[in-house]
Image (cartoon, one colour):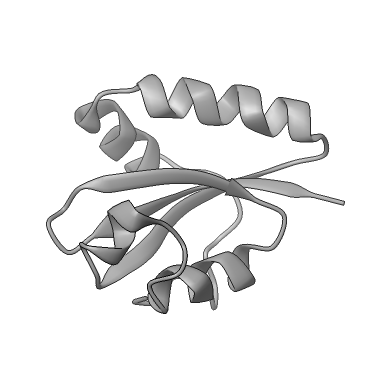
Length: 93
């Protein structure tokens, strides 16, 4: 099973970082206001970044690193992503 660390950009341009095993399901949960209280109050949001990991441990470590980044560092990460394209997932939530 793969694990994903993802970043959503909210209506107010804030960035939310999370972890999931099913990126499509999780983005749908956020869009319905059932994902997190933070995103619910800032809808609409859109998926702007994700990374895939083979282990939960690796994903949690990366999530912790990303969450500690300041906004400008996260924006650079998003702009410089060389990860998989967000085809079909880069949708407005």
